[in-house]
Amino acid sequence: MVILLCGLSGAGKTTLAKNVKTRLEQSGLNTEIIDGDEYREALCRDLGFSRSDRFENIRRLGFVANRFSEHGFVSIVSAINPYAEARHELVETYDNVKTIFVDCPLDTLIDRDTKGLYKRALLQDGHPDKISNLTGVNDQFDIPAEPDLYLNTDEQDIQECTSLLCDFILNND
Image (cartoon, rainbow, N blue to C red; front, side, top):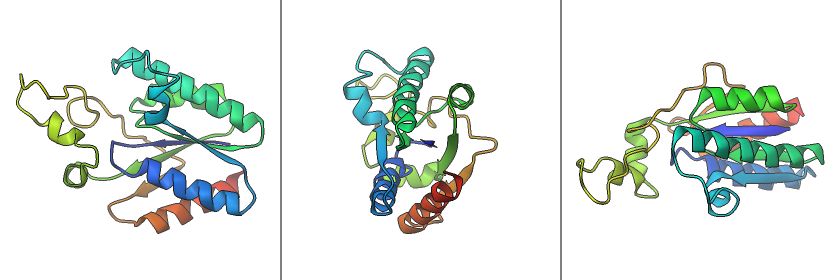
């Protein structure tokens, strides 16, 4: 099974993935996290943040996740994954791919701003530290129309989200 966690930066995808991996492995399920930030530093270092580069990034993450899945692992892709078309491509290309929308209101994410990205995206135009392509602020994010599971980290705590996702995986594997 391939789990596509998608949502804006700071929504809790990586924390959720780590918690789910721990719990699934305690249940005897091999689990691998394919974290977008980690893979951008290694496998996807050559890619930027243009639309075409983001598509290619997701294709690579999906390929790796599928390889783990073919060997009996639950593969959890933790990436912003902003484009519906790219998510759909993975669902069509590989077996047993599930889209999980990890949602959180933008105001809450700006307050959390765990990486300082929102602060930089909201700087005035022309500021040398401004990020001009932060998904959800000044770049596109296609909200999944019909995710296989919807989680809202502003309304549900991490333990509840972890339990819901683990139950989903165990009931759909």
